[in-house]
Amino acid sequence: MSKLITILNGPNLNLLGLRQPEVYGTDTLDSVARDCAAVASTFELDTELKQTNHEGEMVDWIQACRNTSAAIIINPAAWSHTSVAILDALNTFEGPVIEVHISNIHARESFRHHSFVSARANGVIAGCGVQGYALAVQRVHTLLTT
Image (cartoon, rainbow, N blue to C red; front, side, top):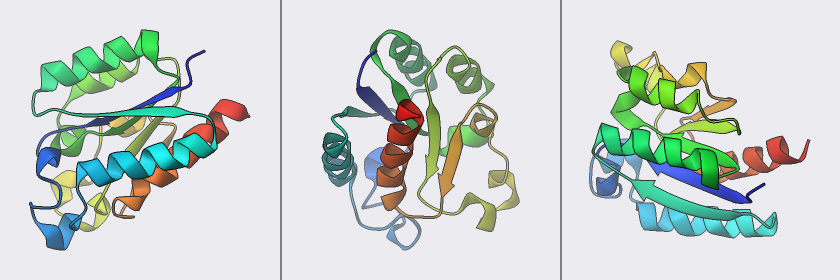
């Protein structure tokens, strides 16, 4: 089995650190990638981090993970609340899936309270800022070793 954790990020997360820093903080996806790689290396795991603003590309990446990745960490962003296609793609993946949200989606607008992705996720981390990604890597390690 692969020791790769693929970390997928949805729309607008390419602007992390610039967009609404009062909600999402000032860290960038590059710093998230470095933090996740550092945590993963302590467990002899590898990470790759990707971001897209295109839903079909996200579906393609999830499908590709079936052959390359031991686990998926996904921050589907706005697609959490709208995309059955992403849920369906995740349902074809056999490894652990952890859903991450930087903000607490349950303390925000009511339309953000439901996530289609949560129906497939082995765990959901929300409201921990970008630290949620590192926590997700730790959880993946636990799920892969127990």
